[in-house]
Length: 430
Ligand code: GUN
Ligand code: ZN
Image 1 (cartoon, rainbow, N blue to C red):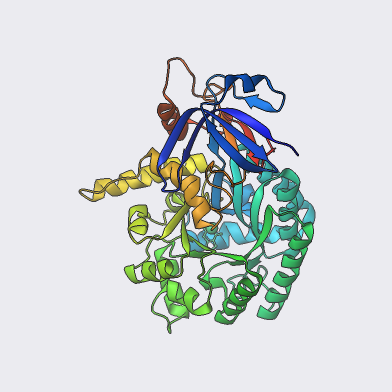
Image 2: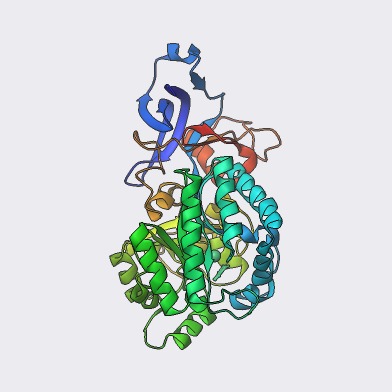
């Protein structure tokens, strides 16, 4: 494919994470990658057939990155927030996930998940599927078909409260995972990769976690799990792993903490745990809508950042109530506001901070910032065209706004109606 170009205003973060706004830019795209970014391009270019000019009022932002989403839990969206984490899992979540024995059900749900998250602007998703290899493969196929960049995890659990949603042995768990990895490789789509997914320390034996870590190491794969989400959960981890003094030490002893590891939640991590996570270059995925829906707690992102731990954002559907990173940005702002009201002198997150977390921050957390996260030449063109005055939008252009003001309005008051085009690796996918 030759060069395609797109001209219009852009808002993104530079490599230091600072907000950068340009009123008029031409981005040249070749083979899915950004070849050049010209500031104030020649207006004669506009008439060339391979050049697209954004309509008046529209602007480009990088594709949004959902660092933690349970694709299988979409049917439970908005349900069951009357119970805390462990009861919520047993009552609502495991019974739903068991249904993915049925490949037809998996097909229906996953088709909807990928289309819906793309519509919300999620160009990269880090997915949990279920225990089932077949269903997990269907999710990977759906991401490939619809053109989403995705890490897809077949979930591992060999210690389970319910016998009917559990793997039969650690050997079976490893064998099924190896098969799944091979099958995803056979899809042969560079945008879709498997991710090693021990559900959390409570559902996996140390032996299983060690063998999964070894698999991640030998195959150079990402790892995802949950950490320190809920006080009752943390106590239960202490009870079953008394030989370790913290939750992070369990994962570290298993070898699961690498620079390609993302840990969802991390609300109650101690300073010592933050040091371990920082030393291993692992990341925390902040899931504020889930943390408030399930009343797990308020995660202090400023504290994670002060420990130089990488942070991205996650919807954690259906712990989180919407599959939208824009909505998670808002939830992160609200959680941070609550923390600032409790702590004198606390500097709450602002719209620029959450924009970074949902774009470049997510890319850094997933160790994908060489490929995505901003509009730097050499990266792939994952982008959203935003129109605040799109049909049926809550927003409008009833007065003049600067691009900075438009970004604020998008984050505080926008939704998927304002996401009018979605590009992944240079291809329009929505
Ligand atoms: N911890 C273990 N499994 C889950 C899950 O499905 N959702 C959330 N929020 N936390 C978990
Ligand atoms: Zn989760």
